[in-house]
Length: 191
Image 1: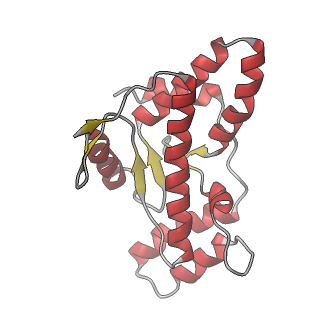
Image 2 (image 1 turned 30 degrees about the horizontal axis):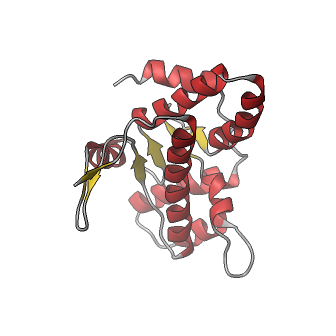
């Protein structure tokens, strides 16, 4: 089995890791909605090993545990490890030269906009960014009406899971996370 390097060695690897995780989760969620169902999930970061038939590692177990224990409605919850990776990037970007800081600012804003602080204090993927990931065949990107359609005729348990997502999509966009939000989260959720 081949190990994947962890932690990332430089800023480019950190940004690539964050973007890859958020993009894969966001695109998968959007495509699922486009095909008539939604998802719950967890994002974790850490050592993984793979070969042609198997992918192993603690992040898979932790992501499953996050999904099982924290994603009780349609949402994708970020692990402490993943948020720490973002925090580390924020720290590196803060310590870079003025030129590099300005280059990082756009990337930082995109990363922070891709996430939201949810009702229970966990950092989650922001479902409003699903609009970027997928466009419906008719040229629209209206996930809230899709979610409403999916809610019709469902049990109360399933209805509640869809209703939470519908409310977020119909409401105003969650505020962009700040560096302070990430720092507070790291302090409060130390594993």
